[in-house]
Image (cartoon, rainbow, N blue to C red; front, side, top):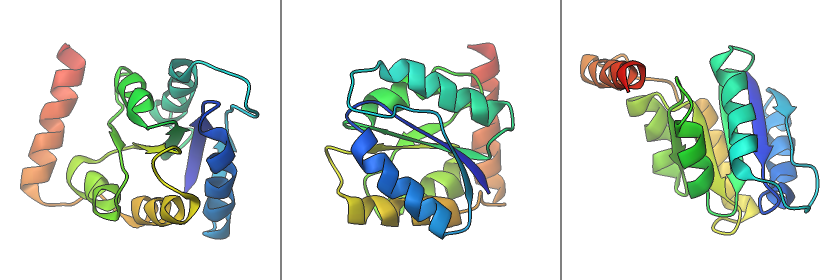
Length: 148
C-alpha cells in the first residue's frame, strides 16, 4: 500500500518510528514533513496529507501531532477525508472497518513508540467492511461531504 505521513513539530520525533515500521511492513511511504522541531502549522501539513489521499497518490494517510485532535479537525475539513484520532488498537482498526477512515491521527504526546507501532499495524491491516449497514452510513457521510 502507498501511504502518506505528515507531522507538526510536536509529532516529528515519533514520525520516524512510524515510518520505519511502515517500511518494515513492506509499504511505500511519502513523508511530507515536518522534518525538524521548528514550529509549523498543523493545518498546512494536514492539507498536504489529505491532498495526497484524495488525489489517489496515497491509499491512506497518517498524521502525527501533539494530541492528534488538531490534525483530525484539519484533515476532516478536506472533501473526501474521513480522519480519526486513534489512541487504542480497537479504534485503529474499527475506524477503517466501520467508517472507512482514510487518515489516522496519532498524538505523540499521548502515545509512545510501542503503542504507535501497534496502532499503525492495526490501521493498515484493516479493511472496510462489506456489511450493508456500514456501506450505507459511509455513503451518507459522502453525501454530507458533498452537500456541506
